[in-house]
Amino acid sequence: MAPQFILITAPGKINLYLGVHPHGTDAEAEESGYHRVDTVMTAIDLADTIAMAPHDELLVRMVPEADFPMEQNSAYKAAIAMGEAFGRDPNFAILIDKHIPVRAGLGGPSADAAAVIMGLCYFWKIDATDPRIDAVARSIGSDVAFFLYGPPAYLSGRGDAMQEMYRPLTGTPLALVKPMNGGVSAADAYAEFDTDPVAPADIEPMLQAMRDHREQDIFANIHNNLGAAALKLSPEMADILEWLRAQDNVRAVDVCGSGSCLFAVCNTQMAAEKIALSALKDHGWWAQAAKMEKSGPFIAVG
Ligand SMILES: C[C@@](CO)(OP(=O)(O)O)[C@H](O)COP(=O)(O)OP(=O)(O)OC[C@H]1O[C@@H](n2ccc(N)nc2=O)[C@H](O)[C@@H]1O
Ligand SMILES: Nc1ncnc2c1ncn2[C@@H]1O[C@H](COP(=O)(O)OP(=O)(O)O)[C@@H](O)[C@H]1O
Image (tube, rainbow, N blue to C red; front, top):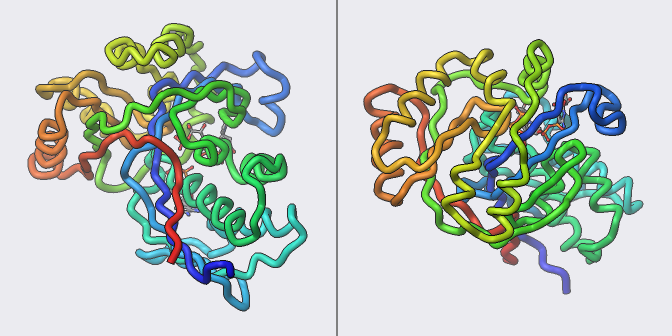
């Protein structure tokens, strides 16, 4: 008998490499205003938790309560799109325990959408390789496809076309720091990028380092050419960037996706914890120690 309740852990992500290509480089990706993007992402252990059970209608709630209508929730959109793709009524109650900050570049809305897609596949016994799943993911957002696969990966196109997957960097310590208030939306960051587009760094050294699992080279090739746009939209991020770079035991620092969060790869978990605490205590920034995670969303059955 199918279970009546599942709990899905939906990890956020960081981009170890984010290369946005100025317009005019890829006609297909640029349809409807999108940019050609090459990215290497890894999941992190800062995660939302999503409880799902069959219900008499589709109901999506967040804790803390969302300040936008349910119909705009990525989890709701994913459930509707899955229902349409598979010809079924997505009548489920979905409760999202929110831990991943929004407008942070940590992929929270996309992680929630991927978790709901996986949850519905579980309830409806849909094969994970069904191509309709990938199409649903892409229709919700560029980052959703990454979460469906899980391990660190290189994606191209709009950042939604899987190219290669790599051995995870599980447990690598991170300090995440962002301004306490406000954030940067992905759409605003891309629009700002267009005012002064700069070509990305060569991705090959990063891909080769990921293939060979050479940590030192991976961290030496961390790159994000959307970061400058985020910094213009949220100037406090520049203070955080400078401060993180000056901390002890930090191997690399960059912007998380479209911001407003920044990450520091640290030598030890204690160093990451110390940096997070100092960011909060001495500067009033939002901060959290985290780790790189081996995979994307995973399901526990109740
Ligand atoms: C920047 C990245 C890096 O991983 O994520 P975040 O850091 O925001 O989490 C992604 O490219 C964001 O992906 P996602 O958050 O899924 O954004 P989407 O809903 O697909 O797109 C939001 C908006 O960003 C712009 N956009 C997004 C992706 C892309 N390749 N080109 C774009 O120009 C478009 O204006 C689009 O309307
Ligand atoms: N499940 C969700 N969790 C959080 N925010 C969501 C969700 N679904 C839709 N949103 C909307 O997405 C916005 C954040 O989008 P975006 O800036 O692209 O995300 P990110 O945090 O990945 O940078 C929120 O302000 C909110 O309006």
